[in-house]
Length: 380
Image (cartoon, rainbow, N blue to C red; front, top):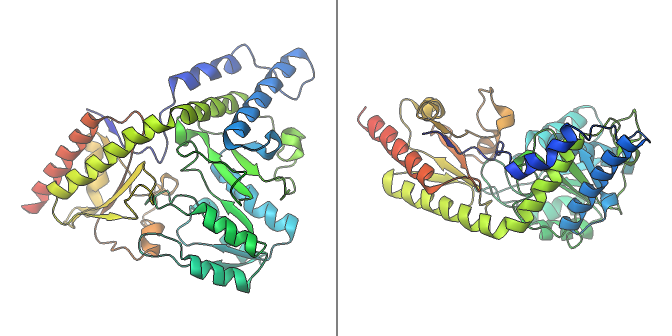
């Protein structure tokens, strides 16, 4: 049996999404910047997709800019808001995705900004009192905090952070790559200037995403060389990808409640079963559904001689999981998120992440293999 429990890294493409994309990969191949009928047809498809995304998020189509994915969108929001608005101070956290953390550190090293890192508790909850102190001492900062941590799942209270940013005239960017398509977001009600998206996190294609830019916080272009995306991002659009993104988001929006219920039940079942089957198991991040991304369960297993081989052993058994961010694969430094939270690194931590395609049978299979693995190690 093959079990895929690494949906926070990427998700399986929905068949309906593939079906929507196929015409743009075959007969509707025109360049959307061309003025002839072939180009006009693909241009119309892009704008229809933009309207679909905007309607779902309760924003205007003019506030949605398609990108190559979440990393580009994060970079665009951070670098261009700093450049356009003369920002000299950025507030973020040490447990952000590297697309945010590395970008800020590069800009600070170049002398363009000074960075402050807000405190968080051991579960990854941002210290809102500390955030307000930083804002009070550094008004008109850029605040960049992710909606849900991609490794441990802890959620950020977007509304409260947005209100603090408004109080101190700060610009607020939130990496919503892990939550887009999994929660309903009314961006018109949130005090957020930028949010980001990567389609492959919610059963869309890889290589496409978008950046929402609040109309009150315009920024200068990020990629030069063409007039695409209303002069904000040069380069011929990934037409099929954009259509796939909009279709995937539309499916998620319409089926969200059913998928949430299904995945929450699986997550709760796996967590409760692990507590019964493996003594001393602990969990990283928040576990309650109102404080944690329901698609992620980060487990800290008891230590044993082959701690570093757990992911390899699971893979041999047919189970795909992760030790953290997929963007850090190949790194031997371990999770920067867990280190930043002061988590005991000697014990192996594994991130299991679920999707609408995950089944109870797959969870039972995984539980049996984990029990077998740790039973064997207990005898060593």
